[in-house]
Length: 196
Image (tube, rainbow, N blue to C red):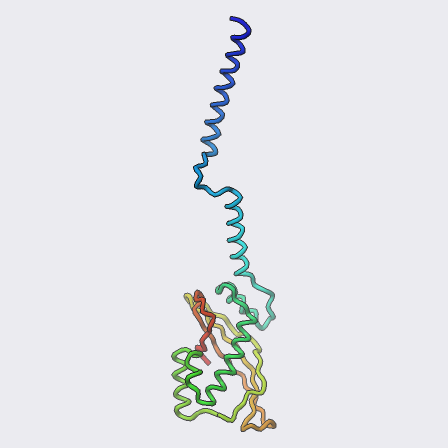
């Protein structure tokens, strides 16, 4: 047996070791079939999902009188307390003015069925004050946020000042607690007044 024979055996042994290693690696790592997304694509998709989820649940710093709204941020995607509070003030003014004018058509889409029934009865019985005008309005506090099943209800305390009989020297100050509710999963941004 000459030197060339040893060289041949070395090549065969190295080839067998290489084949063995390829099979071991294939068993450990698996093989690509063309249907898997690349690791980079998977990573980018995961990052995107996490970012959108986190973005939807970011709770900003809230003043002490509005701290209850943290619950709304967690329950509703893309909740914005400034939009909600502005909307609540607008709803208060619209509802009070429409009630005092006896405008049922404007009231109906803003109120829950029960509250609309109460307002409708008061209008029919002429328990309205058409001469009353809102002079100033502010939200002093979000009293509570209640989540029950998919319903979310937010109770807001309003402080309002009204002119009586169109007399600017006669100002009446009132405090009202109104509760607005909506389906937390609904994409409809509208809230209904559910209790006063």
